[in-house]
Length: 211
Image 1 (tube, helix red, strand yellow):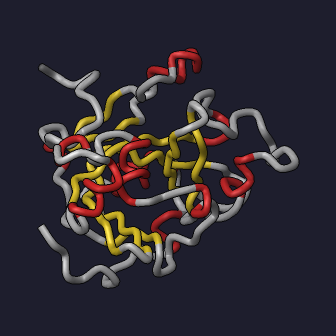
Image 2 (cartoon, rainbow, N blue to C red; image 1 turned 180 degrees about the vertical axis):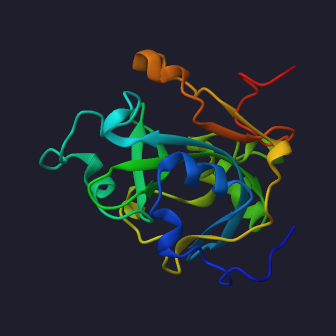
């Protein structure tokens, strides 16, 4: 499915200047867009995870009153609406949206999108023809869209990496579950901060969802 209005309805700064859980829920159904020299890729956001700053033991900014010198979290301590991109396992990038106001380092991990524009480019980048294996996970979607460490700190209200309004997602189609792979976070591991469009076939995992 190709989208013809990829610069219309870019989410404004004010959308992001709220607590992570509210932003994470409302990002469902919005469209993540990446423009590059190779072409445009985009997809509908279908799975997110909120990380609630100082009070959330699963958050990278937990217990940090300010970012340590040179620390990867520094972008989280400004106003929301910027890209927080980091490596996991030394090889995969993860794309996060910063949220809340300056000094409150919230973020939302984008875990999965449903591919829209640039599917053939995504297939080439991911070396697979299986559309369900293109963007169903944080590392996969970054590879498919060409999101890299060069996008760290990028303004999501700009015109290269941004999110545009999509169709509203009714509450009855959404589930809030615990987050994935945060067992280290104690009681925070059970917070219902993962938001999914429950019947979407492009989710990263069905864990915590009804069978």
